Length: 359
Image (tube, rainbow, N blue to C red):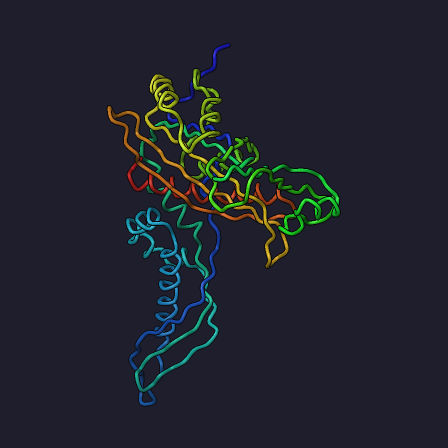
Protein backbone atom coordinates (compact mmCIF):
# COMPACT_ATOMS: atom_id res chain seq x y z
CA UNK A 1 0.00 0.00 0.00
CA UNK A 2 1.45 3.38 -1.01
CA UNK A 3 2.23 5.91 1.65
CA UNK A 4 -0.25 8.73 1.84
CA UNK A 5 0.51 12.46 1.94
CA UNK A 6 -1.22 14.41 4.70
CA UNK A 7 -1.27 17.97 3.42
CA UNK A 8 -4.81 19.34 3.62
CA UNK A 9 -4.01 21.90 6.28
CA UNK A 10 -1.57 19.77 8.20
CA UNK A 11 1.77 20.78 9.58
CA UNK A 12 3.95 17.74 9.07
CA UNK A 13 7.04 16.90 11.04
CA UNK A 14 9.80 14.39 10.88
CA UNK A 15 11.75 14.41 14.11
CA UNK A 16 14.64 12.03 13.97
CA UNK A 17 15.68 13.64 17.23
CA UNK A 18 12.10 14.42 18.13
CA UNK A 19 11.84 18.19 18.30
CA UNK A 20 9.35 19.29 20.87
CA UNK A 21 7.71 22.63 20.63
CA UNK A 22 6.36 25.54 22.59
CA UNK A 23 6.04 24.72 26.26
CA UNK A 24 2.56 25.07 27.66
CA UNK A 25 1.96 28.15 29.75
CA UNK A 26 2.47 28.48 33.48
CA UNK A 27 2.42 30.99 36.30
CA UNK A 28 5.54 33.15 36.54
CA UNK A 29 6.33 34.84 39.86
CA UNK A 30 7.93 38.29 39.97
CA UNK A 31 9.07 40.47 42.87
CA UNK A 32 8.27 44.13 42.22
CA UNK A 33 8.34 47.59 43.78
CA UNK A 34 5.58 49.90 42.57
CA UNK A 35 4.47 53.39 43.49
CA UNK A 36 1.74 55.84 42.44
CA UNK A 37 0.86 59.40 43.48
CA UNK A 38 -2.33 60.05 45.39
CA UNK A 39 -4.49 63.04 46.30
CA UNK A 40 -4.93 63.33 50.12
CA UNK A 41 -8.49 63.29 51.39
CA UNK A 42 -9.83 65.42 54.24
CA UNK A 43 -7.98 67.49 56.79
CA UNK A 44 -5.85 64.56 57.89
CA UNK A 45 -4.69 63.79 54.38
CA UNK A 46 -6.14 60.27 54.25
CA UNK A 47 -4.89 57.96 51.51
CA UNK A 48 -7.89 57.25 49.24
CA UNK A 49 -8.95 53.65 48.67
CA UNK A 50 -8.43 53.88 44.94
CA UNK A 51 -4.74 54.68 45.53
CA UNK A 52 -4.21 51.13 46.79
CA UNK A 53 -6.11 49.77 43.81
CA UNK A 54 -3.96 51.87 41.50
CA UNK A 55 -0.65 50.85 43.06
CA UNK A 56 -1.57 47.18 42.79
CA UNK A 57 -2.49 47.77 39.14
CA UNK A 58 0.91 49.39 38.63
CA UNK A 59 2.53 46.32 40.23
CA UNK A 60 0.63 44.03 37.86
CA UNK A 61 1.75 46.00 34.81
CA UNK A 62 5.34 46.14 36.02
CA UNK A 63 5.44 42.37 36.60
CA UNK A 64 3.95 41.77 33.16
CA UNK A 65 6.57 44.00 31.57
CA UNK A 66 9.35 42.17 33.41
CA UNK A 67 7.98 38.87 32.17
CA UNK A 68 7.58 40.01 28.57
CA UNK A 69 11.03 41.61 28.42
CA UNK A 70 12.61 38.20 29.09
CA UNK A 71 10.78 36.59 26.15
CA UNK A 72 12.24 36.10 22.65
CA UNK A 73 11.89 38.95 20.15
CA UNK A 74 9.25 37.20 18.05
CA UNK A 75 6.99 36.60 21.03
CA UNK A 76 7.39 40.19 22.22
CA UNK A 77 6.24 41.38 18.80
CA UNK A 78 3.14 39.19 19.04
CA UNK A 79 2.38 40.52 22.52
CA UNK A 80 2.85 44.12 21.35
CA UNK A 81 0.14 43.52 18.76
CA UNK A 82 -2.17 42.35 21.55
CA UNK A 83 -1.26 45.11 24.02
CA UNK A 84 -4.74 46.66 24.04
CA UNK A 85 -6.43 43.29 24.64
CA UNK A 86 -3.94 42.32 27.33
CA UNK A 87 -4.35 45.68 29.05
CA UNK A 88 -8.14 45.27 29.03
CA UNK A 89 -7.75 41.81 30.62
CA UNK A 90 -4.92 42.64 33.00
CA UNK A 91 -6.76 41.13 36.00
CA UNK A 92 -6.89 37.77 34.20
CA UNK A 93 -3.38 37.93 32.78
CA UNK A 94 -1.91 38.99 36.14
CA UNK A 95 -4.40 37.44 38.56
CA UNK A 96 -2.63 37.71 41.90
CA UNK A 97 -0.74 40.36 43.88
CA UNK A 98 0.60 39.55 47.34
CA UNK A 99 1.55 42.82 49.06
CA UNK A 100 4.56 42.31 51.31
CA UNK A 101 5.01 45.87 52.49
CA UNK A 102 3.30 49.23 52.04
CA UNK A 103 4.85 52.67 52.56
CA UNK A 104 3.06 56.01 52.41
CA UNK A 105 5.26 59.03 51.70
CA UNK A 106 3.04 61.92 52.79
CA UNK A 107 5.60 64.57 51.84
CA UNK A 108 5.79 63.38 48.23
CA UNK A 109 2.19 62.09 48.28
CA UNK A 110 3.22 58.65 47.07
CA UNK A 111 2.07 55.18 48.07
CA UNK A 112 4.62 52.43 47.46
CA UNK A 113 4.38 48.67 47.81
CA UNK A 114 6.71 45.70 47.53
CA UNK A 115 4.84 42.66 46.27
CA UNK A 116 4.99 39.17 44.85
CA UNK A 117 3.05 39.18 41.59
CA UNK A 118 1.94 36.18 39.52
CA UNK A 119 1.74 36.42 35.72
CA UNK A 120 -0.34 33.81 33.90
CA UNK A 121 1.71 33.19 30.75
CA UNK A 122 -0.74 30.44 29.81
CA UNK A 123 -3.35 33.15 29.38
CA UNK A 124 -0.99 35.11 27.14
CA UNK A 125 -0.29 32.00 25.04
CA UNK A 126 -4.04 31.42 24.68
CA UNK A 127 -4.60 35.00 23.53
CA UNK A 128 -1.80 34.69 20.97
CA UNK A 129 -3.21 31.39 19.70
CA UNK A 130 -6.70 32.87 19.31
CA UNK A 131 -5.36 35.89 17.45
CA UNK A 132 -3.73 33.65 14.85
CA UNK A 133 -6.29 30.83 14.77
CA UNK A 134 -7.91 32.20 11.63
CA UNK A 135 -4.64 32.31 9.71
CA UNK A 136 -4.21 29.85 6.86
CA UNK A 137 -1.62 27.26 7.83
CA UNK A 138 0.76 26.43 5.03
CA UNK A 139 1.96 22.82 5.08
CA UNK A 140 5.58 22.25 6.02
CA UNK A 141 7.97 19.45 6.87
CA UNK A 142 10.73 19.80 9.47
CA UNK A 143 13.63 17.35 9.62
CA UNK A 144 15.79 17.46 12.76
CA UNK A 145 18.64 15.11 13.65
CA UNK A 146 20.20 14.50 17.07
CA UNK A 147 23.95 13.99 16.92
CA UNK A 148 26.80 13.17 19.25
CA UNK A 149 30.55 13.04 18.75
CA UNK A 150 32.04 9.55 18.79
CA UNK A 151 35.62 10.38 17.75
CA UNK A 152 37.70 13.55 17.74
CA UNK A 153 40.85 13.56 15.59
CA UNK A 154 43.18 16.27 16.85
CA UNK A 155 45.46 18.37 14.68
CA UNK A 156 48.50 16.27 15.63
CA UNK A 157 46.81 12.95 14.85
CA UNK A 158 45.69 12.14 18.37
CA UNK A 159 42.26 10.48 18.56
CA UNK A 160 39.73 10.54 21.37
CA UNK A 161 36.97 7.95 21.27
CA UNK A 162 33.87 8.20 23.44
CA UNK A 163 32.26 4.91 24.36
CA UNK A 164 29.38 4.33 26.79
CA UNK A 165 30.03 1.34 29.05
CA UNK A 166 28.75 -0.17 32.27
CA UNK A 167 31.75 -0.22 34.57
CA UNK A 168 32.42 -0.55 38.26
CA UNK A 169 34.08 2.22 40.24
CA UNK A 170 37.61 0.80 39.96
CA UNK A 171 37.30 0.46 36.19
CA UNK A 172 35.87 3.95 35.95
CA UNK A 173 38.79 5.40 37.92
CA UNK A 174 41.23 3.49 35.75
CA UNK A 175 39.60 4.91 32.63
CA UNK A 176 39.63 8.40 34.05
CA UNK A 177 35.85 8.69 34.20
CA UNK A 178 35.56 9.60 37.88
CA UNK A 179 37.99 12.45 37.40
CA UNK A 180 35.54 13.95 34.94
CA UNK A 181 32.71 13.44 37.40
CA UNK A 182 30.37 11.75 34.94
CA UNK A 183 29.81 8.65 37.05
CA UNK A 184 26.93 8.80 39.55
CA UNK A 185 27.45 5.44 41.16
CA UNK A 186 28.93 2.04 40.34
CA UNK A 187 25.74 0.81 38.66
CA UNK A 188 25.29 3.65 36.19
CA UNK A 189 26.40 3.72 32.58
CA UNK A 190 29.36 6.06 32.12
CA UNK A 191 31.24 7.62 29.25
CA UNK A 192 34.76 6.22 29.02
CA UNK A 193 37.31 8.23 27.05
CA UNK A 194 40.11 6.34 25.32
CA UNK A 195 42.95 8.24 23.69
CA UNK A 196 45.53 7.18 21.14
CA UNK A 197 48.05 8.84 18.87
CA UNK A 198 50.08 11.98 19.40
CA UNK A 199 50.15 14.78 21.91
CA UNK A 200 46.79 16.23 23.06
CA UNK A 201 45.92 19.72 21.77
CA UNK A 202 42.80 21.83 22.08
CA UNK A 203 41.55 22.13 18.49
CA UNK A 204 40.01 19.17 16.68
CA UNK A 205 40.43 18.82 12.93
CA UNK A 206 37.86 16.06 12.35
CA UNK A 207 34.79 15.07 14.35
CA UNK A 208 33.02 11.80 13.62
CA UNK A 209 29.34 12.20 14.47
CA UNK A 210 26.76 9.55 15.31
CA UNK A 211 23.17 10.45 14.48
CA UNK A 212 20.42 9.00 16.60
CA UNK A 213 16.67 8.94 17.08
CA UNK A 214 14.93 10.15 20.26
CA UNK A 215 11.29 9.23 19.83
CA UNK A 216 10.21 10.03 23.39
CA UNK A 217 9.89 13.74 22.64
CA UNK A 218 7.60 13.29 19.63
CA UNK A 219 4.50 13.34 21.85
CA UNK A 220 5.55 16.73 23.22
CA UNK A 221 5.93 18.03 19.66
CA UNK A 222 2.39 17.04 18.76
CA UNK A 223 0.93 18.37 22.00
CA UNK A 224 2.48 21.83 21.85
CA UNK A 225 2.01 22.44 18.14
CA UNK A 226 -1.61 21.31 18.45
CA UNK A 227 -2.09 23.86 21.24
CA UNK A 228 -0.53 26.46 18.94
CA UNK A 229 -3.17 25.75 16.32
CA UNK A 230 -1.25 23.48 13.97
CA UNK A 231 -2.08 19.94 12.91
CA UNK A 232 0.75 17.43 13.21
CA UNK A 233 1.27 14.27 11.18
CA UNK A 234 4.08 11.79 10.70
CA UNK A 235 6.41 12.90 7.92
CA UNK A 236 7.00 9.26 7.04
CA UNK A 237 3.58 9.48 5.38
CA UNK A 238 5.14 11.72 2.72
CA UNK A 239 5.81 9.28 -0.09
CA UNK A 240 9.33 9.48 -1.51
CA UNK A 241 10.99 11.51 1.25
CA UNK A 242 14.42 9.98 1.92
CA UNK A 243 14.70 10.15 5.69
CA UNK A 244 17.98 8.25 5.83
CA UNK A 245 19.71 10.79 3.58
CA UNK A 246 19.32 13.52 6.21
CA UNK A 247 20.80 11.32 8.90
CA UNK A 248 23.73 10.41 6.67
CA UNK A 249 24.46 14.00 5.64
CA UNK A 250 24.29 15.37 9.17
CA UNK A 251 26.59 12.58 10.32
CA UNK A 252 29.47 14.11 8.37
CA UNK A 253 28.62 17.82 8.23
CA UNK A 254 26.54 20.70 9.56
CA UNK A 255 24.23 20.86 6.55
CA UNK A 256 22.56 18.52 4.12
CA UNK A 257 24.03 17.97 0.68
CA UNK A 258 22.63 20.01 -2.20
CA UNK A 259 21.37 16.81 -3.88
CA UNK A 260 19.51 15.82 -0.70
CA UNK A 261 17.93 19.28 -0.46
CA UNK A 262 16.91 19.40 -4.13
CA UNK A 263 15.34 15.94 -4.00
CA UNK A 264 13.50 16.73 -0.75
CA UNK A 265 12.14 20.00 -2.14
CA UNK A 266 10.97 18.22 -5.29
CA UNK A 267 9.15 15.58 -3.22
CA UNK A 268 7.62 18.09 -0.81
CA UNK A 269 6.42 20.43 -3.55
CA UNK A 270 4.84 17.45 -5.25
CA UNK A 271 3.04 16.65 -2.01
CA UNK A 272 1.75 20.22 -1.69
CA UNK A 273 4.14 21.58 0.93
CA UNK A 274 5.21 25.21 0.95
CA UNK A 275 7.84 25.19 3.68
CA UNK A 276 10.78 22.97 4.60
CA UNK A 277 12.75 23.03 7.85
CA UNK A 278 16.02 21.36 8.80
CA UNK A 279 18.22 21.37 11.86
CA UNK A 280 20.54 19.59 14.25
CA UNK A 281 20.52 18.95 17.99
CA UNK A 282 24.11 18.28 19.06
CA UNK A 283 24.47 16.33 22.30
CA UNK A 284 27.55 17.20 24.37
CA UNK A 285 29.62 15.06 26.71
CA UNK A 286 28.15 14.48 30.20
CA UNK A 287 29.71 16.28 33.14
CA UNK A 288 29.15 16.58 36.87
CA UNK A 289 26.93 19.45 38.01
CA UNK A 290 28.86 20.91 40.92
CA UNK A 291 25.73 22.52 42.37
CA UNK A 292 23.34 19.58 42.63
CA UNK A 293 25.68 16.64 42.12
CA UNK A 294 23.71 15.33 39.12
CA UNK A 295 24.95 14.63 35.61
CA UNK A 296 24.56 17.52 33.15
CA UNK A 297 24.38 17.22 29.36
CA UNK A 298 24.32 20.17 26.95
CA UNK A 299 22.38 20.22 23.68
CA UNK A 300 23.17 22.81 21.00
CA UNK A 301 20.42 23.57 18.47
CA UNK A 302 20.66 25.00 14.96
CA UNK A 303 17.48 25.14 12.87
CA UNK A 304 15.85 27.02 10.01
CA UNK A 305 12.64 26.99 8.01
CA UNK A 306 12.73 27.78 4.27
CA UNK A 307 9.93 28.93 1.99
CA UNK A 308 10.23 26.45 -0.90
CA UNK A 309 7.22 27.73 -2.81
CA UNK A 310 9.28 30.55 -4.32
CA UNK A 311 11.69 30.17 -7.24
CA UNK A 312 14.50 31.24 -4.94
CA UNK A 313 13.98 29.56 -1.54
CA UNK A 314 14.15 32.04 1.34
CA UNK A 315 14.71 31.44 5.05
CA UNK A 316 11.68 32.64 7.02
CA UNK A 317 12.67 31.51 10.53
CA UNK A 318 15.92 30.47 12.15
CA UNK A 319 17.42 29.68 15.52
CA UNK A 320 21.16 29.20 15.79
CA UNK A 321 23.76 28.07 18.29
CA UNK A 322 21.58 28.07 21.39
CA UNK A 323 22.69 25.78 24.20
CA UNK A 324 20.38 24.05 26.68
CA UNK A 325 21.52 22.05 29.71
CA UNK A 326 19.64 19.09 31.16
CA UNK A 327 20.29 17.36 34.50
CA UNK A 328 19.61 13.81 35.57
CA UNK A 329 20.83 10.90 37.70
CA UNK A 330 22.47 9.37 34.63
CA UNK A 331 23.86 10.59 31.31
CA UNK A 332 20.92 9.15 29.40
CA UNK A 333 18.32 10.87 31.58
CA UNK A 334 20.24 14.16 31.45
CA UNK A 335 20.46 13.91 27.66
CA UNK A 336 16.74 13.29 27.30
CA UNK A 337 15.92 16.22 29.62
CA UNK A 338 18.24 18.48 27.65
CA UNK A 339 16.68 17.42 24.34
CA UNK A 340 13.18 18.09 25.66
CA UNK A 341 14.18 21.51 27.00
CA UNK A 342 15.98 22.45 23.78
CA UNK A 343 13.12 21.17 21.63
CA UNK A 344 10.39 23.08 23.46
CA UNK A 345 12.31 26.35 23.59
CA UNK A 346 13.52 26.21 20.00
CA UNK A 347 10.18 25.20 18.55
CA UNK A 348 8.47 27.87 20.63
CA UNK A 349 10.65 30.50 19.02
CA UNK A 350 9.95 29.09 15.57
CA UNK A 351 6.20 29.18 16.17
CA UNK A 352 6.38 32.78 17.39
CA UNK A 353 8.41 33.83 14.34
CA UNK A 354 5.96 32.15 11.96
CA UNK A 355 2.97 33.67 13.73
CA UNK A 356 4.52 37.11 13.64
CA UNK A 357 4.84 36.74 9.86
CA UNK A 358 1.31 35.42 9.54
CA UNK A 359 2.44 31.95 8.47
